[in-house]
Every structure is written in structure tokens, then in C-alpha cells.
Image (cartoon, rainbow, N blue to C red; front, side, top):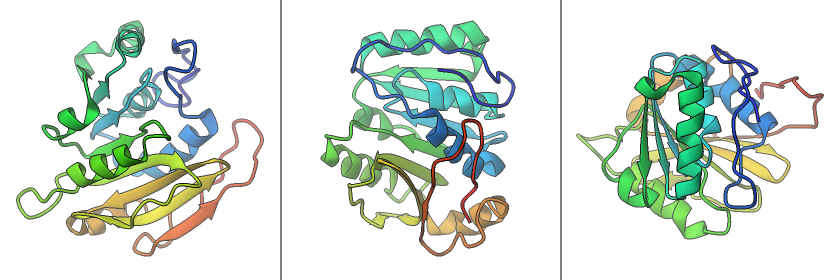
Length: 217
């Protein structure tokens, strides 16, 4: 596994052997950040169910100010720490070991990425409900993205979070949520990535050559 773009482009990351974690496929990661790029610079990024930390490290490589990693698998946490150390990113990262839901209740971020085990469907609802809790009148998380099976049907609304976009790529999908208070900021930030951020759209990505990205519109 490698970092796709940014400061640490092409740097190799250590992975965890076996089925204990499910890394986000490289093409899906590239698609995710094609959409998120305008809002990553200077942001606080939260990588929940982080696995070996590839998504959060990609955010740091692309200019995120800080990344919070949450993972309960102790072996995976060690891999996250090793990857951060190898890139000199320890001072820009926080790593939490434990059950994700308990940690999410205490944290907020500009961008939150969720990738629970696909078989734990209730984990999605619980995590999104926690992140959608009103804080000072609005969700404190500007954007929340859930990676899930394309066969799974997530709700369009969780508390203050409203889904505004779905990207499908084979068996994997990305559902994008935001709070109404952040809608204007996010639609401005993502002008180059989406022609209509206020309407839910479903974008299906065809197979593309390795390294080529189609930015859905």
C-alpha cells in the first residue's frame, strides 16, 4: 500500500497481514480525495475504524493540519504508529486505542471518515447518530463520509447530518453527510468536484486504468 498524492506521494505504508482489517482500496481512496481535496488543507481529519491508517495518512500528506486515528485492534494500532513514525508525522497525529463509538462521543473534527466492518451494520447507525448530535445548535463535524457495501442502505439523515452525495465503485460506496450549517461552506469548497452539492446524487464509477481518476459530476 502506498500514499497516493501530496507530501508523501508514493511512500510505502506497512499493512497488517490477514483479515483483521480491510484497507480502503487505492482507487476508492483516490476517488474520495478527489472530492475532499478542496476542504482538506488545514483541516482536522478523523479516521475512525482506522485499520492501518492509510486514509488518515493520505489526508495528512495532502495538507490536513492534524489527524485523529481511532482503532481497537492493538496490532493495527502498532502499525499506525509505525507508519506515522516512518513519515515523521507523530507531532500531527493522535492515536486512540479502544471502541470507536466511545471515542467518537468525545471528539469532533472538520472531516470524519468512517469505515466500520461491513458485517456490523448497527455500527454505522450508532456512529452516525453520535456524529449527528447537535452541539451548539449544529453538528460540529463539517463533513462525515461513510464507506460501506454498495448493498447496504444507509439512512439519508442522522440527527443534524444530511446525506448529500453517494459515490459507488463496484462493491464499495461512499456516503457523504453534512450539517445544514456547513452546507454553504462545503458547496463552495467542492465546486470543482461536484456541480450540485445540494441534491443527493449517485455516481457510479466505471473501471479506469490504474492511476486515472474520474471526478464524478
